[in-house]
Image (tube, rainbow, N blue to C red; front, side, top):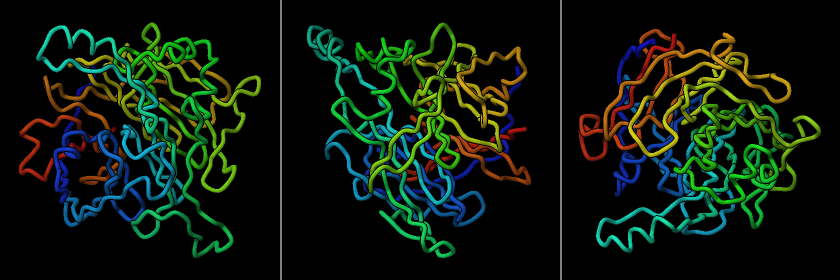
Length: 359
């Protein structure tokens, strides 16, 4: 099995009053053409921008509350942002679309047992949104200098009482529908979107769960603007379905993040359940342009393991990644971590990301 080759580390410097809410829960990353690094914490209602200030150092932190650009269900529930990407002047972001089981507090056994029976739905998690990026800032709408008649508009997938149009479409799916119908929580192998990769209006969503008999799932959808601020789904699948499904053999792991490298999808994979375990990076070749639903094993040659990530028990859970040129390697891979170890934190407001040779 190939091992990772660490090229370097990148220092991320934040100026938040509560840096632990960002640094301790980094869940996604992408880079825009101006060189800005955008990251997200799954505990906040915002996205964070860092600017390059030197060799492998990002700072000048600026926070952008998502609610200033697209409508949320409420001002309280977390979005649980698990993926962000950039395509054609838009920053895209995805919430987990998951339910959650309450955690034991470790005080009274009877109450803890009761808490484990309680399932909660945060409606803001059902968010797929795109926001225009202009000169390193997010805006609600704008026109392009070279295309003044083309209007860019912040928008999100149409919401409803069940979440949004995507959940509606999946509710009758033979693989995902039964899981959605019982509101199975994300960390119990329930529905949990953690990967996002975008090409134009073509959107790939990687599922941490469910993993079905060892097969992970990538959903492919295409969106279009319906009314100002509202996206709808286009029919792209078999028999007029609003999505395609791509089943991939990731050695029983679920998907933690996606990013595009040309027409290939790079897949960050890790355990579906709450446990320390193997994390791997895969390449799904020619993912763009596949027709209909697909199923791809490693034996086919279309899916390969690129490398294993180092395993640190109790810390350094790889959650976000982005193609990042480093040390002459055009297609290196930057990885950011949830629950970073103390060795990654040189100060209260700083954390190191890793850069691996992608090959």
